[in-house]
Amino acid sequence: MNLAELTLHEAAAQLRKREFTAVELTESVYQRIAETDERVHAYLTLARESALKEARRADERLKKEGADAHDLLGIPIALKDNFLTKDLRTTCASKILGDFLPPYEATAAAKLRAAGAVIVGKANLDEFAMGSSCENSAFFPTRNPWDLERIPGGSSGGSAAAVAADQCIAALGTDTGGSIRQPAACCGVVGLKPTYGRVSRYGIIAFASSMDQVGPITKNVRDAAILLEAIAGHDPADSTSIERPVPSYTEALTGNLRGLRIGHSAEFFVDGMQQEVALAVNDAMLKMESNGAIIDHTMLPHTEFAVAVYYIVATAEASSNLARYDGMRFGHRAAANDLAQTYMMSRAEGFGAEVKRRIMLGTYVLSAGYYDAYYLKAQRVRTLIKRDFDEAFRHCDVIVTPTAPTTAFKVGEKKRDPLQMYLSDIYTISANLAGLPAISLPCGFDDQGMPIGLQIIGKPFDEETVLRVAHAYEQTTEWHSRKAKLESKN
Amino acid sequence: MKITGEEIERVALLARLHLTGDEKARLTEELDSILGYMDKLNQLDTAQVEPFSHALEAANAFRRDRVTNKPDAEALLANAPDRDATFFKVPKIIE
Image (tube, rainbow over all chains, first blue to last red; front, side, top):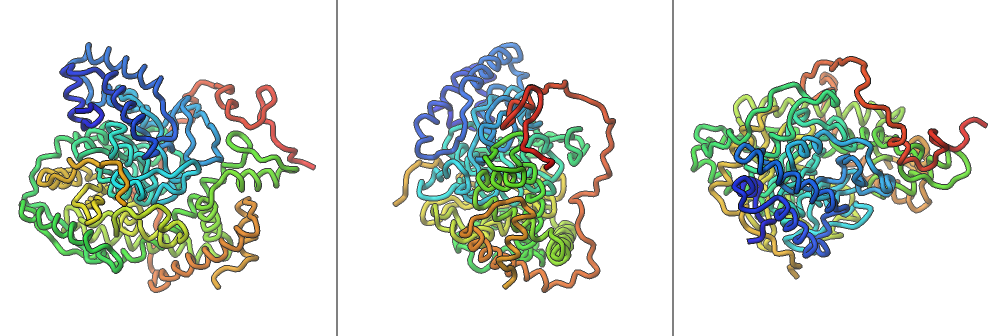
């Protein structure tokens, strides 16, 4: 077996037993990238030299620390390219950042490095994390390892594809409206968006600050628990990160569902969803029920308004966050005659079509005369969406839904219709609007052989129950052990 | 029509974004369709609903105003599109 195919907890156990070295594991990952990334295009930047240095250092530590070594010591991990990494090119998949070399490091990346993880490289994304297909990368689109003619999802499509193709042992992504969970579903891997405030956003290139959150993308649920534990916690550099102890998430993986109340909401089974997705999610719930969970029908009546709310709030915040790209202190500067033209042209040349569309929409909904009708209205409806969840969680421990209405679509299929693309986030964005933790994990395959994702949404700061339910379900299936073949299906 | 070509020009100026004629035409059409979809929010009476402000009841996070990083002008200037010694060089601001 190729070492790169190992899961995180398997690799950690074998590294501690000295069955192979961190350098061998890292070499195996780069070997796999060399063999496959011409087809997948998951990475924007590789950090081979520094990674091998980190792996050698990890081997030294492994010798000293032995059985006490941290699970992440010597583990090759990919970072989405919107994490600032000191002295390692960070592009956010945008031309406006050029070959930006961050002068500081994102807290989540620094925590991984402190634990001894090996940073493999920077994974592709939709420009500024805006998209659901990775087609909005200014460099190239990433392909789905299960069918190279299909999208890997987005915006963390590079991270999810790299995990599915064994081009890393695990990855980190960010999730503003589903950008960890939807690509995880498309690529048949596990993706967890933690509670807003659980993980520091310091050093993450901002998109929509009231919803952005960092989380793991992994080969199974246990690996997600390990990775979350390593990155969670309060950070004085992020005033929205919450001061709360970090539990041992692996201890929550009891395999037991007895007595847990699982909410099922009819609002999540809408017209236009793929029949096989609905069937697979219902099957998963039956399986949970037969393992002792109680299925509880619950109402989330404002779900149908979530997409409209999200694309007002997220674009408003983005238009403000992206005002900093003015070509003055860093990034692309256009040659123009005066200051105003320099701003206008630098931004025109540096941003891609989707980013421009969202800046325009966000500026419009915040502009004088429209603020009340759009932005304020959306924030009022967002309160209603949050209240729906508060109500549902009075009698449910978690809510189970599909992650996306369909499996991964073909490259180019939705590129011409932004609204259709936005609707592929229909099940994931509610959790961002309400700040809740949610995971996606595989629950089946459609007749084209494409993976289907199951979403489990939890109460604020109750990642433990989310992980416990996901893990218990995973134990009863074989979906997570199937491997993508990296071929075109037709 | 939810949005006109003139409004697109006004918004592009606010966003400091130069748009080509084609981009203006396409954005007028696309934003019109997206804003049309947003209209569904008007089905809800929200007169008595407080606007959302934060996902969790977070108190304000105070901290001491203290320098924690070492000054490193060179690292910050390294990404500058244009510089003059230890200054960012920018187009003329005052006529």
